[in-house]
Image 1: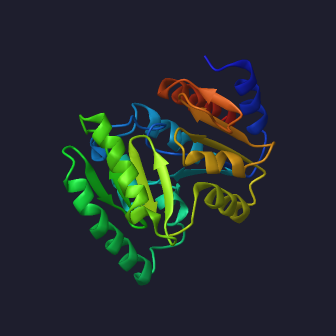
Image 2: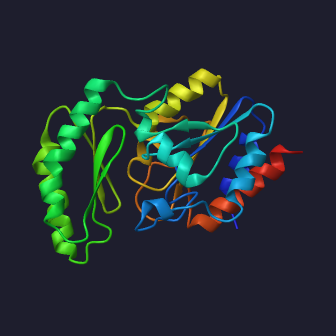
Length: 248
């Protein structure tokens, strides 16, 4: 059950138009997986997002650290959604060639560190390179790898570190989810915004929004969000309540 404060905030939010409903993907709409390609939407979530996006004056946006192509492919979603990838770096189009070259140089510098730790994985995204240690059995070695990546290649002044759950992402731009949400809100002229997130990079989104918006942290941990849900079951309940309220 949603707590009374969150339920009341959602009911108030639903009265506004234009309305922006935005969410992170991994850990919110899909369970975290060792293999990111296996992180499919939770059952029923695609239908709920479709119902919300079909409401007049409502825009549904997926805001992710994944690249947009990856996000669309993994989610399997199609329709009138807005897509913001690479923590906001992919908003109106792909990266410039110069930034892509810098990303490739970063990946080349990180590769030997990652290759030396069994179970670690290097992911090259459109605007960043990410060191994943979720599947590293030796947890001390996992933490050393993240520390070495941050102190070595990740220490360059032109990079932006985006630490997360068992991952260190190093971006070649200073875009973040907060600036992307503000940009999208302003573009749409949205009178209110909902944002759901679960990870460290989502805190930029929570902090960027105002007192009339609804911010929801999924899971444990300190947060700037005004509300919290324990798990993905709560996310589906929230989406269902909004879809029902908005369709009246």
